[in-house]
Length: 163
Image 1 (spheres, one colour):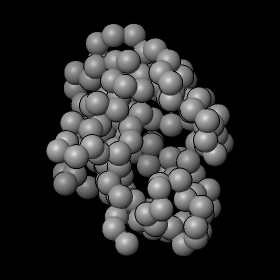
Image 2 (cartoon, rainbow, N blue to C red):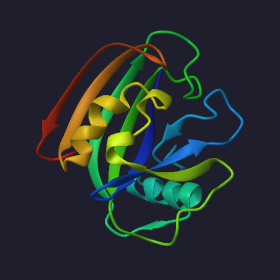
Image 3 (cartoon, rainbow, N blue to C red):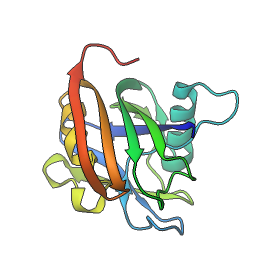
């Protein structure tokens, strides 16, 4: 089966991280995440990340930088990525933007202190890679999942440049 390409933008400053509470009716309603989604036909990965941030948080990135790439392989059915067991997630950082974060039909943006990130209400991989991103590091990894909430094993490391 084909690998699904997804994007994720993480907005932060020296003290806070902006996350979106998922408000759209779905299995993951109430969870927190960065802002992103799938790539539309004809879009580059970067264009999709930018569009998703504007659509979901109402802000325009001024310094979007690719920080990481993670591949997820899922063992079981029930994953939220529309039937594809493998997902390639491209993660971008944003520290400068125009506009004020505002609620969309999918996400309700909320600022959290860096020491109070609600990892218990986020995807289980976030706690592993997000500290690298917040430290300004580039990273690459692979997560093997039993289901969307259960990590079997993973490999994650710093890299010089993200492809």
